[in-house]
Each structure stands twice: as C-alpha cells, then as structure tokens.
Length: 432
Image 1: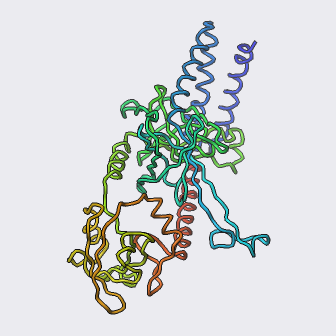
Image 2: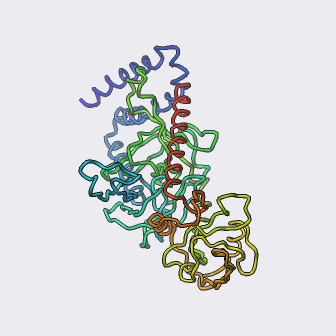
Image 3: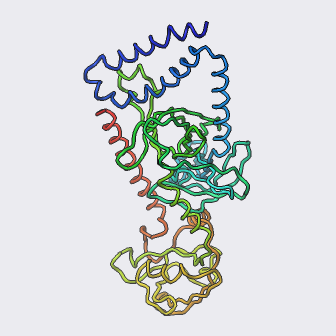
C-alpha cells in the first residue's frame, strides 16, 4: 500500500514543483542553482523509490543498516560547543531593566555551535565566531559527557578556532583525500541544534565558489554551523561555515519554504595542514612577559613603545613594570615597535631573564624580568577583559586589546561589516 501511494505521489509532487519553478520566465535564471538543491533532496526519494520498486525486500533494510552505521561513525567525532560570556545588567554591554536598575545582576550569555574532534589527544575544531569573546568553553561529546575546553590557537583568516580538552583516547576521524570530492558527491552533515539535539542533514555538493568554498545543498539547522561534513565512507570532507537561503520575503519562494538551502563549506584538504601547524606551534614552550603595548600617544610613526597594561600576577608585574612606562631598550637593544620587541621575547624560553631600560615620569630605570610560561589565549583575554588599562593618557588603539570604548567601536564596525555582507549575499541570491 505504501508503495502504491509513493508511485502516485512522487510524479505529482515532482510535476507541481517543476511547474512552479518554470511558470515565471523571470524566475528561470534565479532558480538555476536551486534545481541542484531540489534534485538533491528529491534524489533520496527517487533512490528509495527505485529500491522499493525493485522487489527485493532485503535492499531497504540493508540500506537502513548502512545509513545507521554511517551516522554512528560520524556522531562519535561530532561535538557541541557551548561558549559562555558573563555580562552585567546596567553595563555598556546590556541595558538595565527597572528591576535591576539599582541592583545590577550577572547574566550568562550562551552561544551554541558545532565542531569535531581533530585528533585523539583532545584537539577540537570549530568556527572562531562560535567562541569569540567566550570566558568559558564546554564541549559536549556524543556520549553526553561535558568537558571544559581551552582555546589554544585560532586563524582569523579562515575563521577557525582550535580548542583542547584534557582527555586522550578520543575517537579521531578519517580525512578524505581531495580527489574523492566532486560536484555531485553525496554528503552528510552532523551537528547539534539548539537544545543539544542531534541534527543530521543529507545533501549533495553542488559546486565550488571562486574562493574555494563548497556549495552544498542541505538543511542547515540552528547551531549546526562549524559542524563536520562527511562523505558516505564516514570521512571528513569539509567544515560547514555558513547558510545561504532563498529570500523568505519572496512570494514565489513560498512553495519551496525553508527546506531547500545552500550551505557553504570549507574543504578539509585546504586547511588540514594549516591546523596541524597551529597545533604544533601551540605546543612550543615560549616565554611570556605579560604586558600590552602601544606606540607613544597611539601614533604609529612614533619610535617609542608605551606599556598600556600589565597583567596581574604576570612576570612583568613581579619585576615592577607598570602601565605608563616607556620601553627604551630590551636586552640592550633599541625596540621601536612591537615587531622588534617580539623578536626579542619570542625566542626566549620560560625562566629566561630579559632586561629592560624604561622611562617612568622622566626617570630612566632598569628592570629584569624572569619570563613565565605563556598561558592560554582565553586566559589572557579573560584577564584583560576584567582589568582596565591604565596609562598617563587615554589610549584606545593598543595592539593586544582595546579599552571599553574601543571595544564598543570595534563591535559596531563588525556589525556593520556583517550587515554589508548580508546585503551582498541577498543581492547575489536574487540574481540567480
């Protein structure tokens, strides 16, 4: 009976869909790339229909077992990322309500995204935008266990972040060779949606954009950004980076709803070696000073560095460096910019001693710092966030952080950039 209904329904659904697609001459060009998405979704229906019509009652159960096996393999390396940020009502970051005007309270903001295990020694990959500004990061494994994660490296150019959890023996994925990925390849995306429910989407690689991103026809659920994309061998082929969807305000799109979407994915073959280098670099023991600096008066053309912030309990704080000091020399060498200072500090190991010639309130003095072990990126950012910079002048453009007013300006700039990107994406979609 189910087979008979499918035989009657499938041609009708397909006919109505194609009629709606081509009924308007103007919509033909705009729908060109949507055909691949439609066929990708209908492909599974047609595939299952063929199996049902074949008359072999064992084919469908075998296919079901294969899909279950693929999902079980993929979910073991797929993880949920929970990034938490603490804000206080009544501050610049969040407005106060009448109830909290006189008694500000702390509010925890949570961002949920997806990621995947990169190696069995605890390294996790996700999108940088998922964990930006996080004060705490947790990773939810497939078995329901939560692990606290630390940010060890990131690459803003490709918007990737590398986390590490304190656990070894994790299931490591297989990575597909680049030659195994083609336009028309079937893929599966597995991540975590809001509420930590597993989100599974099947789709097809529709094309490759000019910047190397894959266009994949899939259903993109909330929270699935950053998820791994697998081929039907269970190998990782890419990372889901963004969702592209037809304009919801277009009446002609009402037939298709939100089911036919495009996801942008970064091929794993393009970033795997980069990730491995970042992980190797994060394992190197480097000395840490514990200051942020700026050019004098914030002017790039100045040839004197100003200490704008000294981290509490840092080697620099222990040696007596203070915000407002001018750095004249490091290890007897004149340092005129940040690059020259880093050239002196980066090669040093923890416990190495570094001498500074400083100018403080018109007095020249010497200080020797015993470098410490460099803490994690998240630890540094959290310490910087909760300790305001102090300097003899108001400086907003340090190299390793911004004052609160600078943070707000930077946030507004990022919002404007995102709004511009959204407008451009909408224009591109409407032209199709």
